[in-house]
Image (cartoon, rainbow, N blue to C red):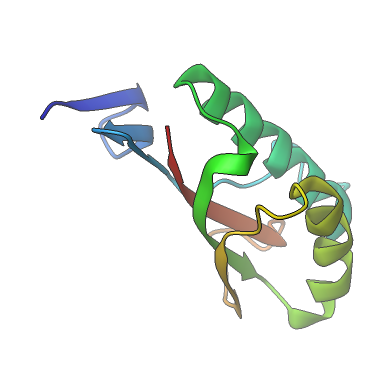
Length: 116
């Protein structure tokens, strides 16, 4: 079975496809400096939609999601956007934890695994 990598740099690939399983790297917002957790989450989910569409999948096919929050005070704002985005009856297995992210301007990071 082949491994397909997209948006690859020396360090990482944003998307890896193996068979009918799609792995996305942890995704952060494009514009984190002036955004709050809800806006960062919305931007991240838009990026997830684009990456999944690029390899023939969509948000209803997400199997698992891991969400990192810089501070659990962001939990409600993140969930408000997440709950609107996830299709009814298609909620993935999910973990959400507090963690120091790569840069203080990032409040949210999300990684998903999906089926094609």
